[in-house]
Structures are given as C-alpha cells and as structure tokens.
Image (cartoon, rainbow, N blue to C red; front, side, top):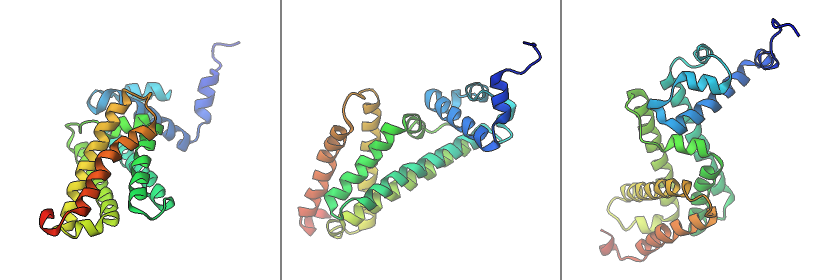
Length: 219
C-alpha cells in the first residue's frame, strides 16, 4: 500500500458533514470541560479527542468561552426539558409533582454525567462564562420556584411575600439537589430512587410543615 494513500480515519473525517464534525467537537468539549474545568481545559485537548486539528474548532466556535457558553445553555435547557416533561406526565398532585421533578433532575445527572459535572462546577473567572453561569442559575431557580408555587400555593399565601418565599425555598432545594448530586457522583452504587426518596424526606416534609403552620407562624 502506498504511503501517500490517506488512512481510513482521514477518509472518514473528510466524509463527515459540518453538522457531524460540530457534534464531535461538542462531545469532546463536554468531556474536557467536565474533567478539567474551564480554566484548565485547552482547545488542543478538545481537538485531539475530537480527532481534528485545533484550527478546525475555530471554524465553528470563535473562542473557548463561546464554546463553553453554548454547552452550558444547551445542557441547562435539556435539564429543564427533562423536568418539564416529567411534570407534564405526572399526576396533578403536589407530592407526586415534587417527586417527579426531583427524580427528573437526578435522572439527568445519571444519564448525562459529563454534562452535570460541567454545569455544576464553580464558575470560572472568565467574565463572559461567569455571566452565563449566573444567568442559568437564575433560570434554574425560577423554574424550581414556579414548581413550588404551583404545588404549595396555599402554604405560600400565608407569607407576606409568597413569590419571594418560593424563591427562598427554591434556592434551598437547588442547593440540596446539587450537593447531593455531587455526593452521589462518588457513591454511584446507590440507586437513584433512594437518592430521590432521601431528598424528599427532607424537602417535602418541610413544605408540608409550612402548609400546616398558622398565618401568624408563617411570617
């Protein structure tokens, strides 16, 4: 065989469509950002894993920050889509809705381990990426607050500012979910159902207690 003939791998790369090549970059970037964090991730390493040269990445993404922000936005939207679908399919009963939403979150964590690690790392110093983290965190809080308002509206009505109270509870639930997901990453032998049940033992019990309090005690 002539040494001038391209390898099978090179032939395959040439036959890839732009959409396929872009998808390879995205998958490789997800892995590298998840493993190393934004600051330590390099475009050369992403390119190596994608089987391309670093210059090719810039045909699709103008900078590392642009690539990271797109990944963050796409994965956050997918996570919220998981939760929204679960809520639509669950019976319209507060405890069941809450369980469905929490289970959907942990199912996403279970099925998208690279995405989850990338989403919930500490925000990097790059201002463009840090701003994206802040925006997406607020988006997640708003989604959880809406779930709480929908399913615990009567209890929240006892407070002077129900919407603000829902946001407080949402931040607490979000922090609990994220911390437990990080712990679960190191204890993956525990079934998802058990993780969901333990979190609900803590959070839903608290919301039920709120619903039983008198208006005076709620303030």
